[in-house]
Structure formats: C-alpha cells, structure tokens
Amino acid sequence: MKLKNALLLFLTASIWGVAFVAQSVGMEYVEPFTFNAVRSLIGGFVLIPVIVLFGKKRARKRSACAKKEERKTLLAGGIACGTMLCLASNFQQFGVRYTTVGKAGFLTACYIIIVPVLGIFMKKTCGRTVWAAVGLCVAGLYLLCVEANQFSISKGDGFVLICALLFSFHILVIDYYSPKTDGVMLSCIQFFVSGLLSCVMMIQFEHPAWRNILAAWAPILYAGVMSCGVAYTLQVIGQKGMNPTISSLILSLESSISVLAGWLILGQKLNGRQFLGCVIMFGAIILAQLPQKNTKLQKR
Image (cartoon, rainbow, N blue to C red; front, side, top):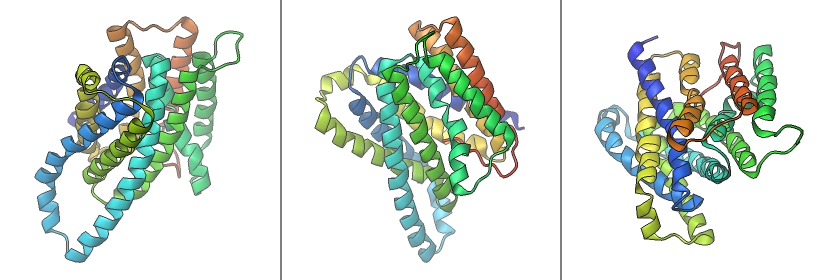
C-alpha cells in the first residue's frame, strides 16, 4: 500500500464524514432541496477548473470519432448518475433533519452491504463472508435504530435507509459508466444534473430566500467545495495504483468519522445500545470488504 495514496483516501473519508455535520447545521437555515441544489451546483463549478487543467492532454490523444462516441456516453452517464445522486442525496438530507449525524453516517454506509446483494440480480455472486456481513448489518441496524422493547424506526432513520439503497444503485450506475469515460467529467455533469433537478423540487415545494442561503454559507460551501469537489478529486487520485478493496475499506471510515464529528462539533451522543450497534455495523462493513471471489465492491 502506498502511504501517500492511503493518506489521500483517509482525508477523503474524513471530509465526507464531517460533511454530515455541515448537512445537519445547514438545516437550521435552509430546507433540504435548497441545500442540495446549491451544494451540487457549487460542486459542479469546482470541478470545471480540474477538467480544464487535466483534460487537454487526454483530448489530444483521441480521434474525432472517439470523442463523439465518448460525449454521448458521458452525457448519458452524467444524466443517469445525476438523477440517482439527486434522489439519494435528498433522501439523506431529509433524514439528517430528523436523526443524529452519527446514525446518518452509519446508515448511509449500508450501501457497502447492499451493493453485493443487488449484484446477485446482475449475475454477480456473493460469498458466505458477505452474507455473514449482511446478517451483522441487520443486527447492528436493529440496535442502532430500534429502541429497547419498541419495534420501530424513526422517520429520519427510514429516510437515510432509503438513501443507502439509492446510493447502492448510484454506485452500480457509476460502475457501468466510469470505465467508458472520464471520471472527473462524469462527476461534474452528475453534480449539475443533481443540482438542476433539486432546483426544480426547491421551486415546487420550498420557499428559498437568498438571505437564508447566505446565512448558511459555511455549511453549504463545505458540502459543495469540500465534499463534492475536493473529496471526489482526492478519491480519483488516491485510488490510482491501489487495491480497490483496500481503497473501499479506507473510504468506508466516513461512517465512524461522522460519529466522532457529531460528538466533537455538535455534542451529539449515542447511548450504549446504539454504540454497540455502530460497532457491529462497522465490523460488518470491514467484513464485507475482505477479498471475495467473483464479487466486485466499489465506493461512490
């Protein structure tokens, strides 16, 4: 493992983990669709300079026919990825509104468990270790979300669980399109698509005001610049030359970092039962990342 790459991926996970705090704080000023619309558009604009700087050399090496075909694939992939990202991020944002940062981080991380299960329908087999991880994840979810002697899940937990499922589909869509086109350009387009779709929902269901958006400038900028733009670029650089299983394991640390960030910054706490659920779920995440035959797991 290259130390530099590992540190870059850990920094990526840290940025994503702290982003849950930004999302929670942002809800004190603006509504969910407004928050995601602005952060996604900012994320798209942040990646434009990266594309300009690194895209020229690649452009010279491709033929006109190849460029035309790639543009079609890039557009189709950007729309598909952006639509899934819009749905997933907005369910997550509504969930963060009604649950703690730590729980939102761990529940979102369930996509690492869900992806191999969905892979069955795509003729990708799962080993016994993955199924054991699924069982552990269910047990951890029960302890984390269901209060003692009460078989219920809060509204916020339900939203984030739906978000985890949607992020699983998002990962599979990226898995299909990313080998066929430029990853940074694909991400840039998906942010603009997600932002524009969120704008439509914002205008339809919310009452955005510039004074509220400006009041939430800090969490929105962090979520847009750091979480969307910077973290994605660091992930692309950090994963080069690294074993994808090790990369995914490092990136999955965002869930535990979200708990730590919620505790340090917002003063949010988990009781003993919920903490045990977090530990079990983290163990399931690690177990799911162990090398598997015929199993392909990737991070968003």
